[in-house]
Length: 509
Image 1 (cartoon, one colour):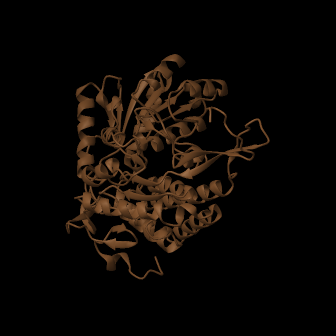
Image 2 (cartoon, helix red, strand yellow):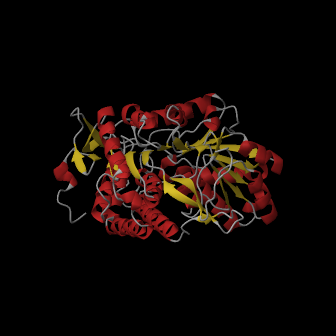
Image 3 (cartoon, helix red, strand yellow):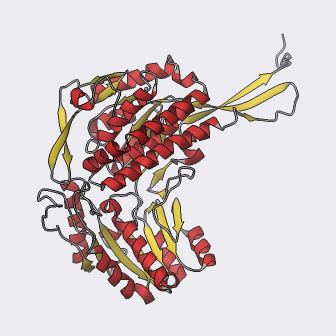
């Protein structure tokens, strides 16, 4: 990454950015960032706390209340977002590698993430630049000009997860900036590196001082303070259900706007007619692997629940397990590796606990279920876990009810369409799901009955910047991406202008 007065290496652990300055934590505390492939530290960041958070919020508040960004013409804001997208493309290889080392995913997945981040910045640039200046409201009189206009919310607090660090940050930062807001972002303390790099790119692109601020630190201090801070106007959180409910409670005290994306337990429903041809069968199996095991299953929309029609279950699961056992595990930077490690020892232990409980409750292990042997591609200290297929599962099992966030696929069966829908909807979550069938009528019918925010038909995992992303039930509130994603970062104002004012004549005078 060129053309900087100070490189990240030279800056060291000054990773808090507030009011245009890179700072160390006020306490002096630091945190090692661990490469999950070998459990060794590869970077050091500041461990911020409430004091650092207050400093960053104050900078964002000044930049919004007295700065130029909220009043910058839309065309100029859009142009800046496009410059950021160009810089992301320029630094694609370095950022993709950094994402791989930080989160454990393969470099190829990291590169795809950077492409998607650039797409998000371009999309919101185009969206805001192409909008009408306001919605005219017919007041029924030629003497009245009435219009609804959109204004930025103000200071936005953003709390992002560890699995897709830069992608999830872009889904918040791009629309917030397009709408004219300032922000403070807290990336996951486990995977903060690419978000820190993005702040550098925003500065390089010409974003005014104080608009973009970042505090690296843990959720229980930095995240909690952001959620409750009286000078924050909106808090957007992506992460787990427990933390999300805490954010909502804290934000309720000051009646902030809140957007929550809290994960899912996503069904992948496969009807027998999708497997009638060899091509159809192979595609459905391949996509079931993709649904469950991309990024080692550490995806909020992971298709971790295979719900398969009984007549094809044995053949389908046998082939699925055969191929899952051949997935090449290793360090994401190694050629030929298809799946990286879990992000932490804690996450691997959690996955092991879910598998153990499933087996105790009667699940049948078809493949995986253990740590792999070390190899040149898999250092002994890495947090690797084999892709795991658990057959003969049922709704009462913890592994079926709760979000695992690991490479674990459970198998349930059905006989009728109604039973398939009932199983797919039998979850507290409602983020995403898929339907596989050769019957177009059934596809639309079942998709219409599923209570999930995104439903794929004969596919899994694609998303479009133009679409809206969010869920039902305990998957959260609010929407990201699409026009609704921009609307999250705006307030509506009704401007009523009387061109020929007259006395009201309500009172004697």
